[in-house]
Length: 381
Ligand code: UD1
Ligand code: UDP
Image (cartoon, rainbow, N blue to C red; front, side):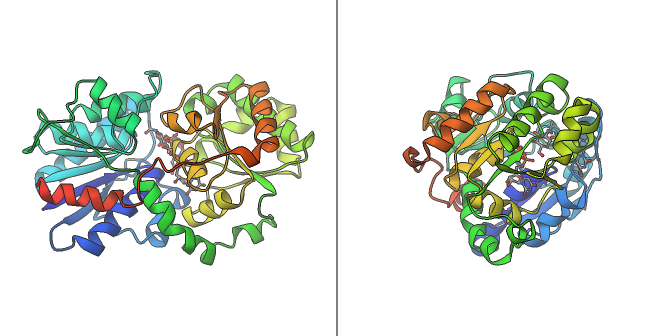
């Protein structure tokens, strides 16, 4: 069968590595994969860097859409993806997660009746102000095969009318839903040793294991809201000054662009001058794993980083009002604080004082989600 994998944003590029690896290792005679990059992310350290280090086949086509308003960006993608799909006539498209690239690909494919395979299906924040929530719902409801990483995700689909008991042949009107584990767990297991061997970031930054906090911030709710962004960075400053913690922040370009204009002048100066706060450009995935494995605590509004904190058994403070990964909070290894400074400081104190009592059960599968997905693709092609 011929599939077209459509990716565009950093986390999707990384996720695609797991499926491409499974195809190369075990399904190369059955599945032909073509990769189309929408160009939603385009900086070297947001896109290109991952292809080489994670052995992802180079995209056959890069649509170079770039940044823009949601409507314009999505519309340009739909137009060009449609042309590619009409020309290539794949048996199915594969999409990941919940970005505008996911939505555009789903709309383009569904209109010309090409089956959609959605990996990371069923996740919900139940917050429709998030652009990602709309993207996920629309993608799920136009998909033919839906692969959910968690039981919660599968239950969300059932609650929205999907039937666990449907039988093949699957179609958009008779979709198949599967619980398959998390392909990012596959990737974290696979690339962990390579990161140990190749990443020099810790020594480059003169960091000692378990002696720093890793933080990432990029959600539009945080970057584009001055109160939220000031609260978040003010809590970082307090943790760095009062508690003498080192904080490493590989900063998304969106946040980097917003900081100077959104932070109060004094806070911006204090953050950029503070010796305990290290702001760096986005790092490669192998470097990111190194930071995650050796951090004492992770503070983030990223979906992927929340889970990787769990994979590497690190407590996580979630800078969002809710999470799709509710299991992390139920296991009490992650705490939701939104953009609230006091809650962030309290969560920090709780975790540093209770680190012995944290338990990380196996809730993300067996590290073979991509293998399972390929089996289903072949069986249902
Ligand atoms: C997108 C996804 C989000 C995901 C994130 C992963 C949507 C709606 N959002 O958010 O779900 O968590 O990717 O990182 O699809 N920029 C650059 N260089 C780049 C890419 C972006 O400078 O290579 C800057 C541009 O100023 C751009 C801004 O970042 O306007 C936002 O980029 P965009 O892709 O629209 O959204 P993200 O915030 O990255
Ligand atoms: N990541 C990375 N380098 C960085 C920051 C993040 O490789 O500097 C990886 C991270 O390990 C995870 C993914 O990017 O696998 C998460 O992407 P992001 O936070 O941009 O988006 P989200 O997961 O929130 O959609």
